[in-house]
Image (tube, rainbow, N blue to C red; front, side, top):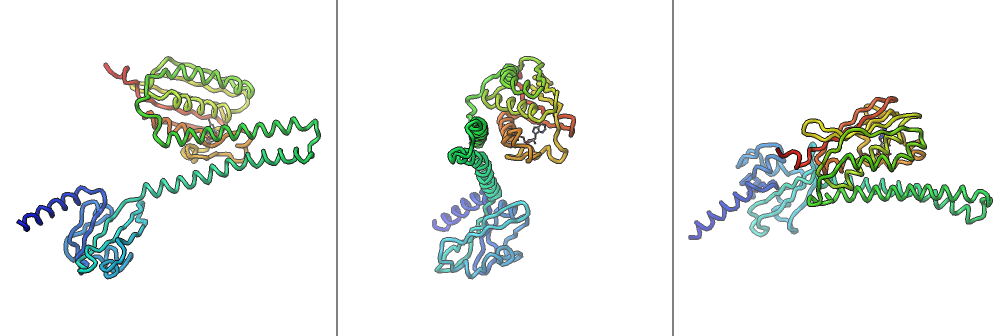
Length: 347
Ligand code: ADP
């Protein structure tokens, strides 16, 4: 019968509302609650009993009066509000405009979306700024050479500056590409394979040997061959960035000690330096994009401020934990703790 059909429709609807991740609150034309699902109560952080204990006016009166929604010309009215830690999007819609039977409010948690959007905007602003600085130098040097304002014996020195700034740009663009690649969750799970972390460290140490020597820094590698399930390129990025920092932020005649060890059910990569250290309040912030402790010297050191955020993302991709201990003026130790390779973990 029709009544049965209505009843089963109602059951279907309440089941649907019960399991929805969006909050739903329905009101009759007097603004009394006729339905509220758990998600709505959770997001609004209150109980919403049926009836008139709390009304439309109490909950959403600030956004628009009930009459406005009952007779709304558009499909719905949207309103975004920050409540505590959350950003909520409310969609207010009339059930039946002509008959004015009631109002439906859908609550959508957009906290993460808003956060992502803010981060994206900041990132774009930072990137533009970081790209502009070396480009401005390059353009400036080239211009004064073009204008004949540089003596011929100085042209080589100026070309050297242009070259350095161009190199900086290349590093920066590579780092940015790496990061955005990681943001997309790439590379896919299927490309994970057992990788010898020690062999990757050998390669990183070899490729940085010359840079270390130029700064009078000794770099050593100890430990044993350990396998990690992962993406070779990302693992190499982790090692390279940590070693590169340990050399860059070291002191005269300093040391960098790299090791790969097994600790219980973890494979641990340690990069320890005898460098300038990181102030206690900033050990978390250094993992943020473009964050640098000493902005004034970063140019001569040549960092991009992206190295450690690449390390952070790449570690997360491998379900690895990062521990950073640092003492100002004495040195820094970074440990990356990887889960054992699946093959070794099996009995
Ligand atoms: P950068 O390209 O500037 O090195 P990172 O993201 O790799 O960018 O590091 C961010 C900041 O953290 C650096 O600018 C530096 O101030 C600090 N830092 C990183 N590693 C070390 C270290 N081993 N010793 C001291 N400071 C460090």
